Length: 482
Image 1 (cartoon, rainbow, N blue to C red):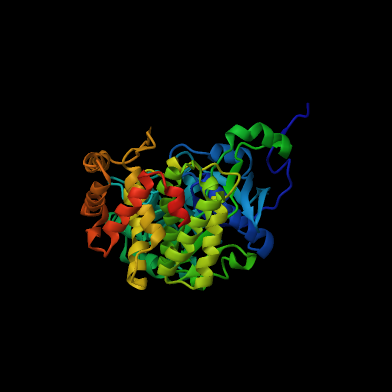
Image 2 (cartoon, rainbow, N blue to C red):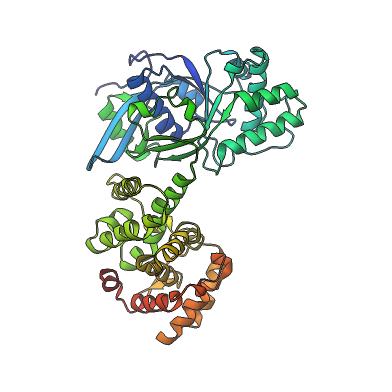
């Protein structure tokens, strides 16, 4: 049997790049998303961008990353140009990993690098947060913003506040206005640590904190397939990471640096904009909204997985109409752009390499409907003067779903107990078709759920009650066809 060699730079000849990027986080998402893009820019646009991956917490992947000298394999699986494609390549942009808890001096030495320009991060949603009792004398401080403040202060002193030695921050944490929040907390530490006003001015005038929207499904390390993958690759790689083909990176507040960060030149789906909100709304309403719209309807219809949903002849056409005819018309972006994104969403839903159970995305469906689907329903009523049929059916199916059973089979409702208790109370009053109007009215009138009384929307209560009747009578396929 062939002995497999460990992936590293002695077994695989790769380029070395100028260390221009400090990256807080070495996990699966950044390596399959941002680092994969940097690799493309190095290969296709002469970016010459090397990454130093800093471990943001006490334990992480830096030892493993250094053992492989920054190299790892990315597998991208999904629909590409209309076809199911699985492809892989070695990404070589990470030059080294640093553990600031054990290599603090080396971490601080990053500040002295004149080539340093960009700071990336993905420290989870909890990472961009203020921690009390972090000190300028900690080696290092525990919080990510405090670590950054310390590094920036060293850089400010090393280059005597030079304007061209400011940094461009591109955080990838999944929180709203991630760059604004990071800057706010850094300035809070500047104040708390009583650092100079000149340093504060340098941060505000010569450093850029972008807000971003990131989108790529990254299942991560394919543990159950590694024997097969190792045989296919012909080498050992402890850091293989899987991602889907689709990717989107919206960066707000750095349009003047788009040539300096040449993602668009490589054909990558990176958007530089001065306002990311339309893109955030597009993602929430089309991608997340379609997920939430389909879950109760498809499950009551008898489907278990997202892919089966879009491939079913009846349901697939129904969800397509919901997206293109009822969700997209409520959004303020060019029609061509919306349709392109919606088609990408449908391709992602039918990805044969992902097995996405509807029940796994049913968590907190009521609150998800409020933020992801209700704005489209209300927007449609406002713009068209009538109810959106598909979204109204989804709302009725949501109420039926929270009954907790379908055709005598129990449904696992993953939600706050207060929501489940309310649903049980409402459904306990159901005894015949006539009582469905009260069930509908009670659900739609719960202002804690929706932030308003939905019974005030013309015809919605009776329409939902009528759809509920069809669903409970087992006529959901007929309802979808009609």
